[in-house]
Image 1 (cartoon, rainbow, N blue to C red):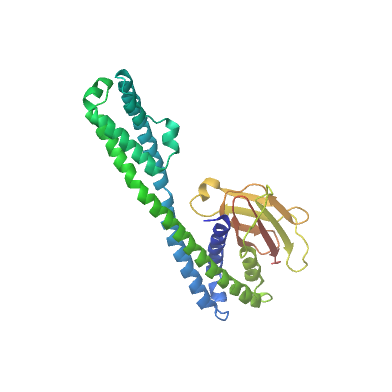
Image 2: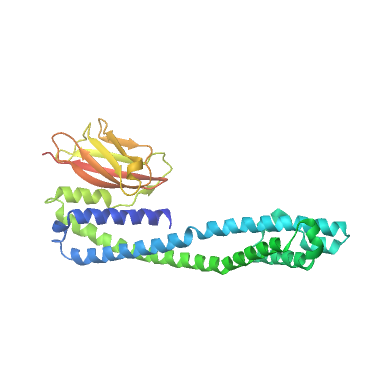
Length: 306
């Protein structure tokens, strides 16, 4: 999944969490219930597809690579012994037939590597009796053949996994496109709450955008103002807590806004953050912030006196 699609997926989750928090109010908006049902259904489909993609991406490539390395090591060991036998017996044809360098084997395609290993195996098997003096035996060849067969079995699987990955990526992109259209309608409906539900309105605005790509070393830029006067607020506490399985490991980060209401954070682990924004004399806000590696996130807050 591309960085932008990943950012949009995280935004979907943020919107879902936000809507669930204020569901009773948001369901009073015209047509919102139907839109949100479709939105949630698409998220569920995305989650299922992401699991399929992860299953096909992780493990398969790694195990194939390990098997390839082992097969090449076995082939090179057998080549050295067969070439030594051929050289001692002036059999130049056999030596040329089985000789491949390590780089020859590593650089070739999987199908060609299989074929070359099979050739080496066949030539060694045909000369097994004299090769016993060169530390080649039936057990050595049997082990080599087992790995040739195992490696051969990965070739169609790799093609299947690539096709599966491509199909899943296409389906994820289509589901996100559908949710983009739903979010556009959420944006229209939320404007109804601009004057009557400022907490919901401001909270939604803070989480319903995709972070933009930037070369800046910053991870996030935050700003906070007084909702009534529109003036920047100094000394506002921002507490960032990463959601999910990495939350305990990363802990919490607390920062306070500068005199002009700004706050810059250089480094944050990728993920969805629960942000608590508070200041004495103002109503505390609970918000979401998406952090994506290599991208700059924004959080704009308007605190209401209370």
